[in-house]
Length: 110
Length: 120
Image (cartoon, rainbow over all chains, first blue to last red):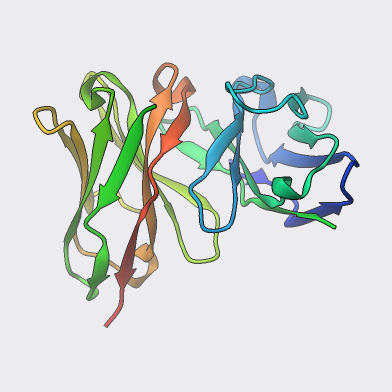
């Protein structure tokens, strides 16, 4: 299956933005979805794991959810800051000994 | 804090071979689920290979039969032997530690990456 993300999203500082990750086949709830932030020139770092859990050190402005009706996962960032500008990738297990990443979404904080 | 440091990247001709290394600090690679993930220039992330604590090895279809993942417990280092390299293998290669159990795990931390360029 594929995980499809919007190529780009944007919002102003202080606002809220949501990035979607839609599973092409099978059910999104079959396996946990994880989210990574990648700032320019840096390695990815996790911001959400197991659909809606935040790693230690990640601010609670970051949250994750699953929507079975749209077969998608979402990453929501509230109270946007300029430092949130980055690429965001979702990831899940395909059930066949492979991990799958979404194509990534570039977040611009205007 | 745990660290991962990759090395071994460089410029290689199509059909050539290269071995990447990932040195781990402050945790033993042999009791964790370790992976290689790559990122082509300006592109997204692609999982490449994983080596589980029990020794099971897994590969993406795009590299199966050409790449081999291994580890040296005495050096606490993960490796990726890449043979029959192709132009589309050009990417930054990251190693990452799995958190959780098997394929249910997520990746943290990641190394800084090493660039592999396959070109004539």
